[in-house]
Image 1 (cartoon, rainbow, N blue to C red):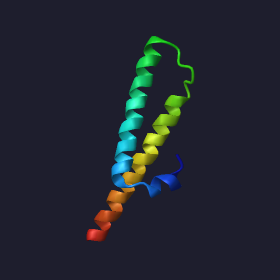
Image 2 (spheres, rainbow, N blue to C red; image 1 turned 120 degrees about the vertical axis):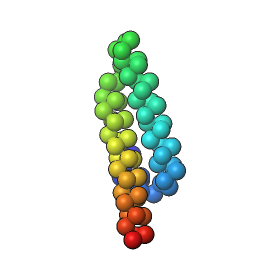
Image 3 (cartoon, rainbow, N blue to C red; image 1 turned 135 degrees about the horizontal axis):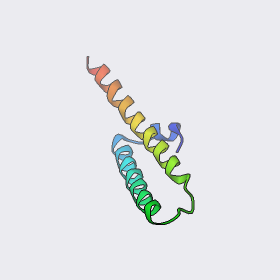
Length: 69
């Protein structure tokens, strides 16, 4: 998902998305230990998308804290 689409989501939706991505990453890592993955690059995509979501959440927290001062 592109960063511009992430900015449109609410904080709750972003947190839900992070949880889904982390869950999928966990499941793929378990599968990787027992069998060969059909698309091993999916792990990289999931990690990067998780990082994008977390970065957007952190930026929102930082901007809201700056607005309170």
